[in-house]
Length: 58
Image: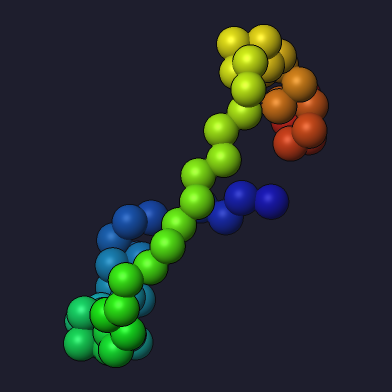
């Protein structure tokens, strides 16, 4: 289900009930992070139509 709300209504609701918060003020852990990136082998052979089927938007 998709709810469609006019942009003016959303802006009024957001400004009235939720004050602006600076998320940079709440950062506490500045240590170095390790991340990993997994890439598929033979990426050219992926059938992209199968992705639509798996998402249920076929």
